[in-house]
Length: 200
Image (cartoon, rainbow, N blue to C red; front, side, top):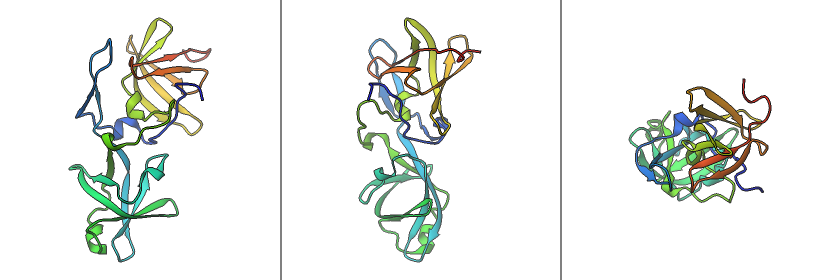
């Protein structure tokens, strides 16, 4: 796989799930970039059964990252909860948290968002990136700075990069190999080719 080929990890709007509050990443030749402390994994739904399970609607393309023994963080206060049971049912995952064994207890968690700590996320293979690693990168065409990547939209066929240009306009770039040539996290930039029809 070519270096820098775009892959999607998180499917929800990036502005929704990124919490820009705690981790600094300094790139050579640029000012420090704030990275999120947490990323959204899903949203808890209703209790299931009577032994403390609760459904979660998933918001990641890699649900295998959720596993028994992993600690996740719930709600605005990011309260840690250890997963002690997980199974798939229809379009939901049924989670069982340590210390909760009654339906009434777990019902209080309904509609809570479930987060993972960025520091605890596993590394991805070369050429694959979490969205939070890409948001804020500079976008270049050869030696011309086009702007900054502000958002990543999930369209089904491929991601679309929303770039705020230096003139304040918005540029939409399909995340396909013909357009996204290279992603260089060390330098904090994405090199692109503007194929015909991308600019209006």
